[in-house]
Image (cartoon, rainbow, N blue to C red; front, side, top):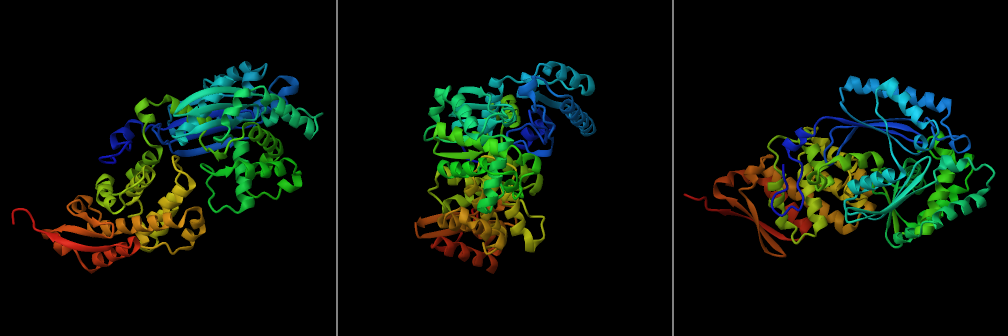
Length: 513
């Protein structure tokens, strides 16, 4: 499956997908949690099919004793034994197991690594601080291909920061600013802790390179702060990846959270009690980082260390594939009909929307790829089914406004309108012009796919002839004239009304007759 002529990037083909079809697991032994994610494959847009974590607290008390505690080790081993049995049951052979700051810094860290191997067979790779920064940056690049700014990955034991631009990594460092580490400074009041954080940040002068750019926030504690902000601001889309906030607005929120009591935090419905405990310190670190760096805005990334490890292992050609189109193609291969041809569909519909910006052309390709995704659903609910699938796709490479536009176009493709409570709930996230565009794209695809009953090879025998900016003709071979019924004429008029164009049908003489 490809995007056709003019595509800067292509979808993974069926053969490429089969080549990377073996499931892969990544186990992250962190300072606060131990997590395993199983991905459907190791291709450009690996989709998680299993995700489980246990809050083992390996980094708790490390600053005072220098050692991993016996209860934390027992909790981690119990979790890892479960993961071992699950992987055996799932017959997953490719497993990447790594540990971060707590195991790296602990005096008994290597002893723990050997014990893990004895009890589970896992070969644990202990990452350096530089490794953590590098793979967190690769994770962000995987999810934001055009990333330009500074990545910050806050774990329980440390904060990794690294510059990214043009797909390349710049300066990076690891800082002792993890919430579990800072919690050990029990004799510090809030002002002392703030001065301590500021002193550590001041020792890294290159952080000023983030000024006016984007700060990409990675790590569970910062993602929980994003969830808290979504909840308190009644944000309508519960998707963390790509959630963006202007720096000043976020700093004001973080200052409030850093001063809140446990009782205040318990009012948060989206954050577990165990996670709430570290939010004030995580918020304080975040706020001081933003003050020191002065980025224009903050983008939250669901792609971090684990995804970065996968991205680093990919071939260059796979890395170059657009993650949005790769993810959409994967879903289409599983859900669509075998004869669906998004490249021809894109070529058929594009003249109605030219000239297209690069961003709009990419989004139109994605809509074409997913335009058959709900074909097997109940007819009266296909619009909402397609809308929800697109809105909550577990893929990267698109912002929230693009995600909403994609979902709206698919709703219009199946339902023929955007009059739905589901659609209205997120309509404020995109402009009025973009809503009109998504509605027109969806209705144009509805026209085309109805005309050919999903057989795009038949549709490709027709084409749009653009007379000028205000008129177009649908050119149809004479031998396909019986296919043009009242339903097709009505849907053509729907498209004409949305685009404010005069649109007619012209039958062409069939060659050889």
